[in-house]
Length: 394
Image 1 (tube, one colour):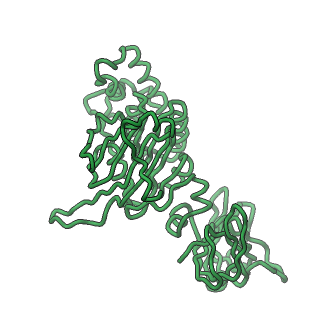
Image 2 (tube, one colour):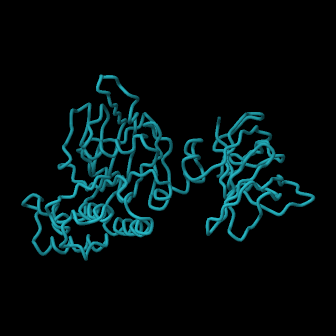
Image 3 (cartoon, one colour):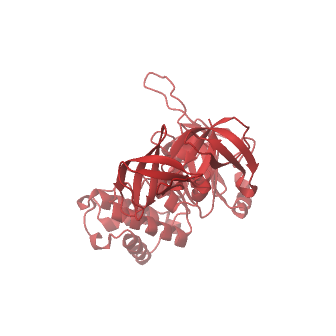
């Protein structure tokens, strides 16, 4: 997003916001923590700007300490930024310039964080019902409506059989699911989720991804989801913001981020990646796919790759190659266009097999279908597919 374009507008223009589809707008947000001695650390959030549309499932993705949770907590009102503005549904809830900082309970959001925050003296049912029981008197629901809403939420997270059980009698994963049900029960317009599935076992986590997306699609709430799990982000998100060191590296759809990473960090963080130092041999235009290059990557054959921007001849670049973007073939006497390699290791993964292949002085990670079989120590021909290779600057 251009620094000259502010996604935050006056609260008086809420109607315009809805027409434009902006549910959450974050403008030039900065947050710096200081040590006990008063020393300032590098910015946890460094000039972050975002515009999130109504109904989106928007994910903040990045490694630990990248600023994603601080950004989420700032939106929630649990952290006070140093500067910037935050707008929810057309209302400015934080502005350093206008000295506005609405508390969390006035932002009308649902929240699920890594800590369960379960009321230990209440049953599972009463924990889920709590947000409805403390609604302002004018919006408070009937006991029947509360019961129906809670029963629906508990069914979604598979806790119906435990409704009357004490909350502290649940396992850690069950308590996380209860926290999710409690946030869902009031059907908020905005749901903020900080790794809510992190304590679930793999099978339940997969099913909960589907259920959470189904509920979000049915209820229409806008979700901002924090995770460091790339698979989770790719599977659930409308768009993803990849963060590193407090800075947004790229905002795009899951497919675009996977297939067209903006830089080496994004390429390496989203999925597995081979990085090769290369030199540009030839440049040609390629329509909507940008620029097509031919590069020397030290593997014995020229490699074709895509680039988001034009490159110069003899320019040193980084060639990014997905493990599934490389094909393995039986060695041939004449292998024009193919590099010759040696199999260093073979790891069967069920649906696929992962190979470590040595090509000249380069070691490649290659993932092939399980039906493709080569033995450790044998020779193979390696084929680079244009769809799985691209170039970023060094």
